[in-house]
Length: 411
Ligand code: FEO
Image (cartoon, rainbow, N blue to C red; front, side):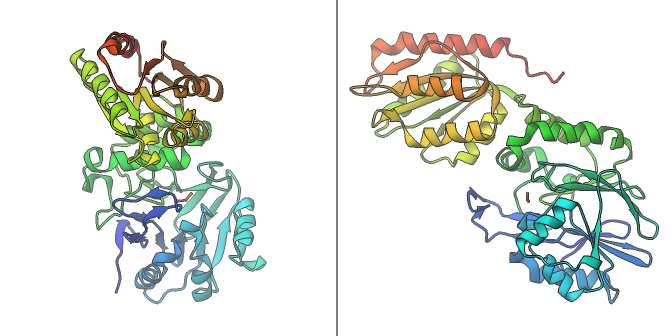
């Protein structure tokens, strides 16, 4: 059996899809699976495989390779990224195709050794930025993409057919389920949220490196016909849409003017305050509002939405004189992933010693970069009472004013 698709003349997708994996990197919940993309080029007398797949889909992957090879030998294996969700089947491929030479960077080979993917010295072809390798009619140019998402990452550009093998860059969660190209899905409706969640949680920390790669790739753009990432659909048109998203995410520029409200609640009182704020915002014309309970929304989604919206209200219960733990995790992840260039407002709730507000504000001011915190913090004592209405109104007025004067233009 086989499950392959033709990308363009003599190039085939031979990867695998996995709906069984519950947690990507054993941390981020998957709702609609994930694909591990690998590509096989039949270049006249030479055959070239670009990356492998996660061990979980290795059996199907090997069957796909054998189907496309149709009795030919595998001559080359190009490894653009060593993370095991792509490199996990290197050894199995080499056991079945001992004649194959492996092309990767110096760091790539170092990681292969560290992970125990043994490659004989005489089989290694080490490449670096600017090197090229000609097989038969196809010449591949190698571009280093350090920290997109690991330090050894390289991208491979086929100058003959305009295919860019982009490693993790431009990837997305979600299994392909037969559909291979961006124009075979409604990306902006069905994929963008998972693409953003993938980017922001996996690569989000390394925005400056993504920006550097985008600048380096810019001269190649007129020649690029296909962008082939290691996860999610292949892009063969609408590059401007994709590049705008990547430019925004990596430069920490919001996609939309709007307000994300992230709250924690124990008995529903802080939730009520969050809903009151949302209602008041909508009443004043700011209807692009999303409300999330930090206790039942995985942090990866909160991070993704924080990259999307220009403004965030954090409403937290005080818990053991601290920030509520779920909100603390959200703050920690925002810092870890370099979230910046956002405006926050803070509401706290506490029955006898509310402290969460000052602690959150302090964290945003001192631990994060380029964050604006609107004054004042609103304090709720146990439940939202009539005497707090003017405080909520003041907060909403400050947010409305800030949203209206915020620019999300890309320079
Ligand atoms: Fe999909 Fe960085 O691996």
